[in-house]
Length: 180
Image (tube, rainbow, N blue to C red; front, side, top):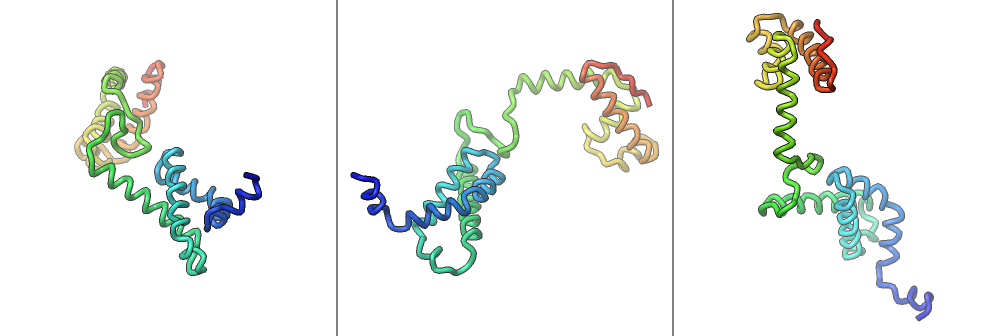
């Protein structure tokens, strides 16, 4: 069959979908990528969105409302449905659990990281170590840590700043040259 013959046999609404993709495809893909954090999943969402647009072509051609708004709403609803469906069933082997942007970590690597941090913490001064433990380990606010340590809140802020610098230096293999 010739190319002209194939063009004549296109499904109704196909040209509308092609035009929608040309006009809104990039922004739709960017929006879906931002919501999913995964380019491949976003491409699937865009495809599903355009399929739904094809099924509801009469609603889009009626001229009521914003076409882009309709497409973005459909994409958001598809993503929401997928997240809810995934949450309703147990995770599959190899499937990432948690937010899309979180890295899947190996337990052994977490243990090694913890040991490295503890080793670096041992090289800090007692004052720096106390402040970091109160703020980051125990989750206290600056005011709570100041009250617990018996120092002014400004002192806690200063010590935490210098403690983090010293910890960073210790973690990178340098010494704890920051002693303030």
